[in-house]
Image (cartoon, rainbow, N blue to C red; front, side, top):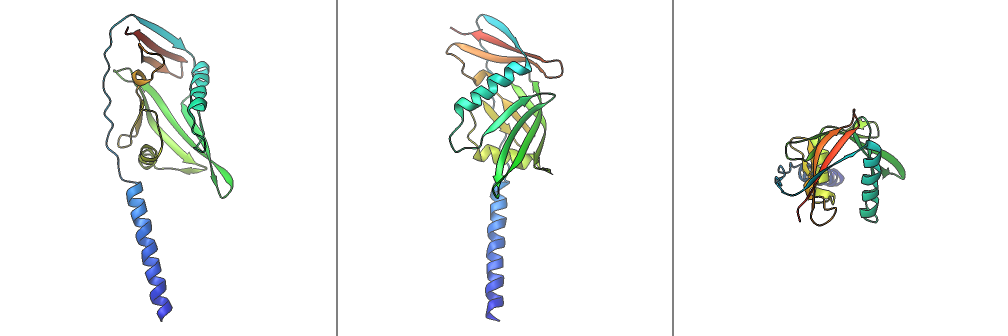
Length: 186
């Protein structure tokens, strides 16, 4: 009889811990505040291709990757894909996120219409984005809006060199038309 009480007490404690863990993990995060940057100065247009931008983005990721952190790869194809492998019980399981990029009126790249899979399992997007927003160390120019299932790449916050401000102009993967404007502020 005593073992039944202990068993159900332990079961209740485990259930409570799991419920609290799920509650805190899946709480929604507030929508990000993204400022609009208006700059004046000489402006140049830079056009690139998916292949060149793939090389540039993945080089940036490798240079800024933290040791011991989760490694990932970005691939521009028909959609923007972010892939990684997470070890589960000693075997890597693929994590894939796919987005449709577009440019908003402020020159930010908006990653919308996401799909996320872990192995063959399709994941609920708002929960994954909330988790990433809370636990991943992202650059200050990446803003996650889990509520609206979007990721904003605030291109004007990417510092390539002092006095240069970037804005996205076009981001059409089907036509391989990716254009940015570079404004010299000094």
